Length: 236
Image 1 (cartoon, one colour):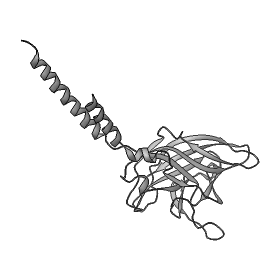
Image 2 (cartoon, one colour; image 1 turned 180 degrees about the vertical axis):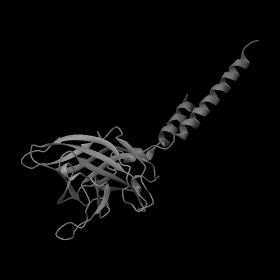
Image 3 (cartoon, rainbow, N blue to C red; image 1 turned 60 degrees about the horizontal axis):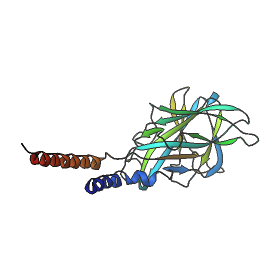
Image 4 (cartoon, rainbow, N blue to C red; image 1 turned 120 degrees about the horizontal axis):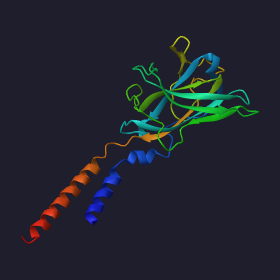
């Protein structure tokens, strides 16, 4: 039994150290508010789309990512309710978002008074909300994917810049004409980066548990040898 236990302990220890190491920290944090906002949803008929750049040290094996929570800072009319929608957009070869978006989740919010700002969250931070395979070519040293925010009413998505690296531009998916436009800062007094307040939690998807298979094979072989030896020792 000591041999068997050590096999399984070795398998557990090597199963997915990257996921264990990154589970407690955000994969991406662009949460330093720059006190600017862009309207989204409602009569604007648009979805705002921004990049998520996950540093290589948080996913060194370039694995798909199991996202457990996404948080955004939004604003609206005090006392008014809105249904927010979280979208995933594919990444094109130049890093821009493509069509073929996927609805991930929705969240109903009510804006407080007198300061109508709130952090809207999708997902519970523990179970996977969705899984994404980032692009590892466009931005060397990072895994890139795109998330979009829509709303049943016009709300504001706050701009932010840092602490994590982000691209200087974002995108506006105009649903009325079904076109995606580049959003960039118009210059002073606006912040240099047109990038939105966004925090993403999750961890790399574990690699195939080959050690479990090896351990299972060893256990099976050990069991068969013991069974054969005991059978041979029985009187005929």
